[in-house]
Image (cartoon, rainbow, N blue to C red; front, side):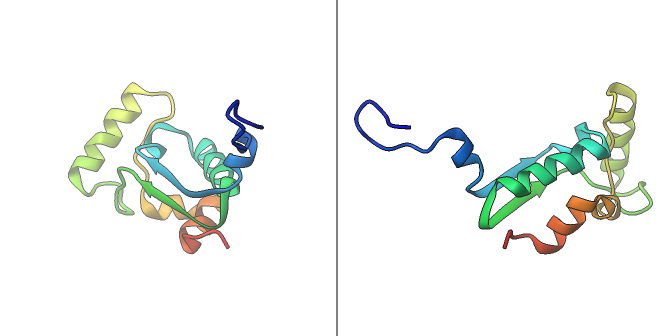
Length: 108
């Protein structure tokens, strides 16, 4: 693809397969476990070798009861959304693509 000024541009498809970094902030608590796993898989595939995935979201401990704000937020998500929930870090690691990504942190 070439810009009218003659500058060579990458197509959106090429750009999406060569991201140096991907950011997923505030996403998992809005989605089902299956949708999260698919999103993480697609995000990993979009990273260039050496690319980094940054992910931040509300999380609880393994009991789901702490920290208190996260636990209360989980109840809110369960009552007000179709798939929302606050997951524990242990739950996140059991989802196949997430487990691999979180243990690696960088695409190789």
